[in-house]
Image (cartoon, rainbow, N blue to C red; front, side, top):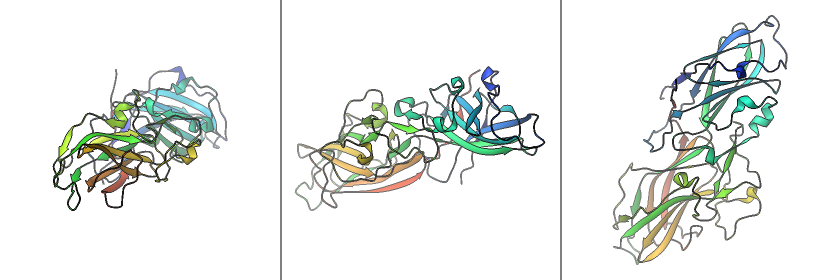
Length: 344
């Protein structure tokens, strides 16, 4: 197992670090505050780490939010190596939020339920700043001097490793296929800050990107598509292995894989997210879609080898005959570990 890298953060001297209230039960014998040091780290689990073009490791800002009895107790905007807060005894729900555009120190009446129910948009992320959230519930006693909070990215990552063309036994044997574009469709636009249930529910009224096909969405195009590729594949050949194509999306828990002609009126009926290859074969534009059902936060979905074995469909939602496209899908925890970008 790759060891976790622990990051600690240096407290900025902000008024936001003053306790806002004293809800909840105080532990007997700890009516007076004691110093508790908070450490922030990215959760790390076994898996394969690829070299991404985006800076998946960057932590450009970090906020600590403490609740007690469901009410806001204290907030801190943090930079650097460590933060020590003065806490009285009791049970705290402690949240670490990295790279969020929201200034949580300005919400004096925030509750834990309201925080967890706030949506983080796909557009809140960038190639150098992925929103991360972690939670630890701890009871402060005289024996507690440190609290470690592990945090995960709110997005899902999709990787395409290799494409192979095998048209043997078809009318297209011996022909060259050109990959024009690769893109995600049916992409959810937002995810809850609440780490349980990992932003899995879908609320009506939210925006969806690339519904049933590729549309122009300048704010998120860099995450969702690669265009003008012009990758020519001779029959029997493959693209280079480990030459990954990276895509990022909000989790979409839908497991509905059937193709749709029109977008449903309710988000709960939305189809699963798909990775689509737009290609040209025998002078025809065709599409191959690969289903990604049940996408969750901080998971990496790697397509190891996409094998194209026949003509694709006329549109991105078109179901192909069994065996016309084959692929392997490996789902792992997204284990790239953050490295702090310090600003002094």
